[in-house]
Amino acid sequence: MKIGINALKLYSSQDYRNAGISHYIRQLTTHLLNTDGKNHYTLFTNNLMPEWREPTRHTPTIVTSRLPTAHPVPRILWEQTVLAWRAAHDKLDVLHCPLNVIPMGAACPTVLTIHDLTFLRYPRLFPQLKRHYLRLFTRLSAQHANAVVAVSASTRDDVVQMLGVPQERVHVVHHAADADFCPRTQEECSTFRTSKGLPNRYVLYVGTLEPRKNVDVLIRAFGKVVREEKLPHSLVLVGAKGWMTQAIQQAIAEANVGDRLLMPGYVARAELPLWYSSADVFVYPSTYEGFGYPVLEAMASGTPVITSNTSSMPEIASDAGVLVPPREESNLAAAMASILTDTALADSLRARGLEQASRFSWDKSVRTCMNLYQSLGTQVPTQS
Image (cartoon, rainbow, N blue to C red; front, side):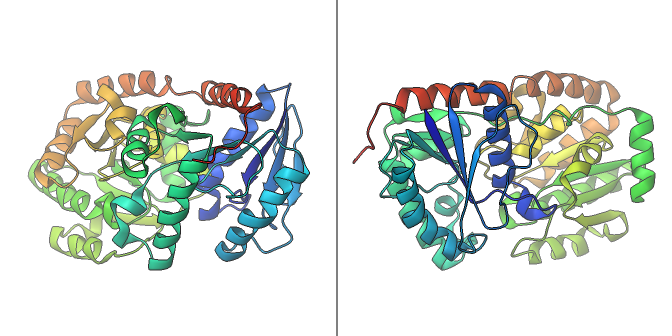
């Protein structure tokens, strides 16, 4: 079969653009090209990605847009016009669109990946135009796609309930942690901390600094723990500043932890495994996640995890993490205190986390996608 992948959100730059959806497209495509020797893949890329740069067993065809599709408006126009035309012109058997939207005029069966429905659950966190675009086109796309890939059972339930897609058309295909997320030796961690000027003992958070992540609650809970338990730890917040960060600044002042707080901002993807492995505990008290990559990455790195008991986090962490209500400061503080003061508990969580992380596999995920492509290859686009 001829299978197309909308890779307009794929980047090679070492910055925030190469995280999230770009990382998903790269991992999905890399593993498909290493696994699938029967079908041929065409990647539709933005103007900054004129070639496929990953070492894979099979080489895809690259179709690069002439418009500046690294920017939203040209990308949307290209997706809805040129991509639909190319799907027909290239006689694609299946087109996989990995982020919320398909071309409405696609002449072949389509697979749509939905990562989360944050824009419906927390609309105030999105600019008005982006919110309206996502609400309209994601709903239309989900209803017209021949199959919807949800990255967790939690997201599947949201797609069924909030977008009205029949459950039999929604398939759960989990992400996985990359192979370099693995436990590191004490010597490696010590060398890394020294090179970055990090303290020997720290609590870690990784993610954008935005309201639904509840970083303000984490800061207050951390202040409570180090005061009451007289612990030497610092708090390290890794991630770019998002929006509405006033609550974070207020929490820093109220908790009086400025001298124990490090905010290195966005860090290069290649360094992330050592940030995780060098921490005593990873804390991720987000209210809502479609999957929760950082939770899985921390477990795969051998770091004890505390996360929320909402949305997809219990599904990803299972009993390998400590689950707490995301806005309850006292519960979060108690969870941190128990891990930071109980070596046996921390060791148990490390072992359980590694076992849980091993259940998620890119090979397993792409084989599910391949089976899905095969089942759709002889269908026509749905008109529901």
